[in-house]
Image (cartoon, rainbow, N blue to C red; front, side):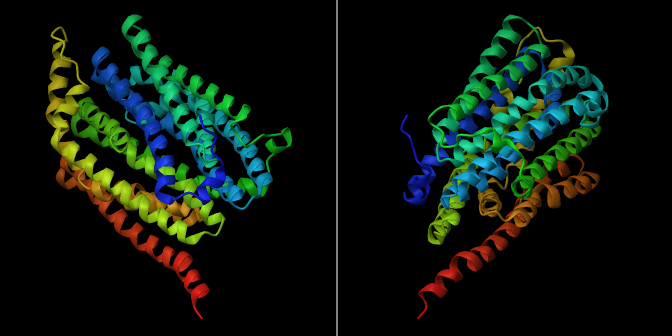
Length: 467
């Protein structure tokens, strides 16, 4: 594999760089999304739709703790990209060392708390009725591996900040392949049920972390740490916290959204509607993988060039990223509008020996999911503006606008909508909240992004070129 220097982020053409960064990121996200998607298909076919609902209850809890690693990774990677862009290698090393220390301290502490309050947390997130017991099994086992996952998620963003997206892609592929193989062995062959699904997921975390550790120990990485780099430094912690807090806040809002959605849908239609949302949730993770990949590829390019004060390249990276991501999002939208029933059917077992309750549950889920899916993804073609716009502020180190724009869709618009609209429109009110929130958040982001670009990228250049 060719070795790529971080300096390429400031020299190669933006279109070429974005493809080089976004394609591996997209493939990595695709593989991880396929992991969740196929895992759900296996669980739905081999265990049942209640098991899918149980995993959906657990995901926001474990993902929030894992998101600590990602938030520390993204916050620190913004510093690393800008430090490498300005040739400050020592600051990049110190930041990476602090990222490792913070990740382990926070995630281990939260896992202990999460295990202590397990019987309170699961019902809070919608794990009620028949969902509770399988959710508790899955939650307890998966939580053991979450610190390992958090370290892997943190390390992955640092690899990308170094300008080595191929290694970041491999780091995301390894746990996916491992999880699917272990799913087959533990669930299908050994018939371990929810225990098998949980141990397959936890085992995959360890595989990913092993590769991340190898990368930073090898000659492929520019970041060679000493023990002194692990000691926490307050100015770096503060900047990691302010920038990483954007990602953490976003995941916190996602977790709150799952909590509200699972409870609202359970009240409207019981376990069956929770299962419908579980399928749609998997598609929200899977279908938009290339858009998220472009966003991830955009971050180090914008951050490096901003640190190097190459403002025309920063502006070009914004326009190119939005153009690529919008085109992809439109293609995804067309596919989801045409094939929602076929997608839903993938998650459900057609075995003739199913109990009557399971057969009725499958029929209900298959009937409800297509219409719900069309509503949820209705505004997909325009979401690239919101994603790239929020990511830009994070890439250049402006934490407050990045935080506000990141929270705009789910925090400021979606959560109020799902609390209000179902009271008037029932189940439909839940689903139409998605496109309304997307449209409102995109309008707000477009306004602030345009204002920032004019103020920081266009006007300084005009002053330089004016006589």
